[in-house]
Length: 333
Ligand SMILES: [Mn+2]
Image 1 (cartoon, rainbow, N blue to C red):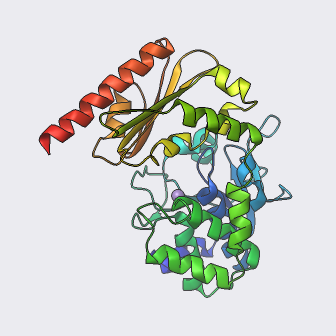
Image 2 (cartoon, rainbow, N blue to C red):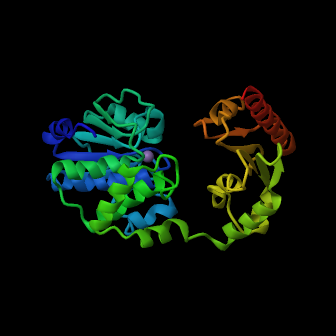
């Protein structure tokens, strides 16, 4: 539970508040922003939501008119006006603020972070962080409860989407009763789970499905079925009538094969080079592995882009390193 008394004191003197989040915002980032904005509007604040990057197509249903969440783009190189408080949600690092970081640094406004990530920079203001929360949206939901602010159906949808996405629609290991309780209460407040699910998961392009078919055909298993790997080429993407962004979450499909503990998916890039996505639940540290090839991430999920190598050589290198790790972990067990 965050210190909502502290939150109340921090927002007390502010009249104009700008809410922002990390670059390439996901549902938790956007839902938390919309929730935070509603929470502050109920406290009589003047609100702006402004991000370093556009709202991805998949999440535009959260801001259907596109008039609530603004962002940097050609012709709009800064937020429209200076706030007296900047609230950063779902991140606490300068690098994640990307193109907005310098503007935040140079703004005379006070700063406040509301987040659930471990990695935190000093953004020049207090950070209200709860790393045990599966989603930032849960923290914002708890803010409504703590402050006794009613939740509108639209805000309930935004917070529901935030929590549902950061828990992988309630199947990631972080799914707990705190998340499920928040989802239940948000549903009571008017959230529409079936509509949100359709928006998030049933808006695939036909090209994405054709490319998925190609992926399923290309899966190769190794290490007695514990390793799944595949490569998606530019030709695959073109023949499917798809785009590279249609490959989002593809590596997770490899992890769905029974017995698979680690997965590597290589994407041949347009400008040359190979992007590799790694997943593991068998003890392999994907972040450490990716770091050896100039990438990074989390232990169970990481990635790297290998620029200097031809695709086949990049694939061989990453697989050799992954197999070596898998065997070392097995030998030690
Ligand atoms: Mn999050």
